[in-house]
Length: 132
Image (cartoon, rainbow, N blue to C red):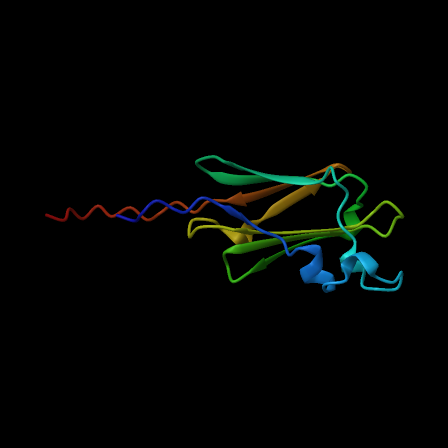
């Protein structure tokens, strides 16, 4: 019998000081775009069902062509959004999944405000062999 899969964990994003250096508040206008914080009303939530994980990411002011979803090490989903508008910014989150997440089958849709990501769950193999 397999142990229960781990619940998804939203990993802490790097702080502005980590992204931009210690003097992040005194940066020049030409400094890295990554120093721009995301708009304050962005967020991410994870919902779990028996067949899939659903991530809902609120990204107001971002466009579809500025959003990237990637997988890393078969267990991490990396969501990045960039907006070059004056009130835009950089949004980045990593979500760590347990062994049951099938990151090769991720689906996503974006309606201009909400990014909905579906990560199917693998059904663990069942052994009919009775251990006694």
